[in-house]
Length: 460
Image (cartoon, rainbow, N blue to C red; front, side, top):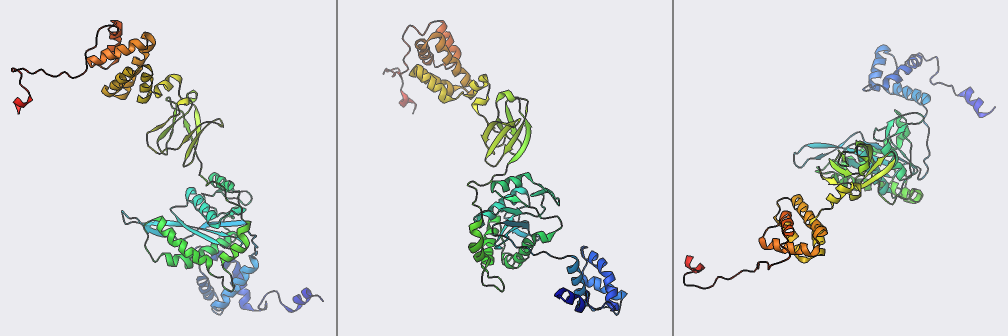
């Protein structure tokens, strides 16, 4: 007979013997006990006490627990997974949070704790972040990749909304920003199945380990910033990764350096920037508003009144109309300010936008230095810059009508009067006062000495 037949003959399928009345009683209860154990707050001790009330001569507590464990092991077998080097990175947030104290208010702020572990070497990364939002999740993931010095082929997140919008057994819907991040580092996203913690048993185990190896040392001190608590975490993490495995002669770090580091993908040249989107309408002034910052950005004037899409990162703002990019700006955070590209404006508006003191001075100097001196005084004497720019524009336009020489003479005459505006020049040119006569000297004249004239010494 072969070994299988011998096994059937000599080893019964269920131990103890089926004729054991106590076991038959318990076996009928096992399916319901398994269901009860899934309920929150239900313990094996409570179930054993209920069992003994029903069957006072039943099994003791330890034997009762052993039969439950054997039943669950037969009905829910566990598959052992061999993780390939450089294949997967498992990520999750720890259930217990760490706290920092606000310097100003003294309030205790609870920080989320991000955990990432490589499947093969089990090298672990831990970081405290302010929330589980996609911005914090992606930044923490990126920090983990740089800590490892490379990227695996796939990342396995839990079913967080910041990573997985809708879970599915076959094809879950991935958060767009997280998918874009993974693509930036050439990684696939393989979410764990919902309510299947064994799909990410490594990171679940890592969370339990960091409670003992990191939390115990970090929580001894009080921290007032994320940077401070993360510095403490990194110190404890280094010791955790360098600790030798129980029953083995190597650590996570040694296993990573020998097996996994060389097979990780190289990191992208540039850091990932989260891209956010917004649909807005182009205002009548040819600008769109990024409401997150309350800052305005220009678009070509022909798109006034159209709906456009803003795609923005921390450093740039791109504007699209029907999948065509129509404008790119550096992102600014100054509220109620405008970022304007001159080429986006209509011709009349573009001319006005180019008004600057430097430009007017440059045009005046091209005519004559006396005209430039007169323009500088016009700008100085006007109360409002726009008022001065309009006067300067009008004054310089007189050169096209009367010529550079006559405008120069008119500026000299007006300067002798001490009047600095556009109308005085028009009047001088109309009356041809620029063409004859000596202009009054602008030099200071000294008072002649006379016995009837009292000097400044008289009043001391």
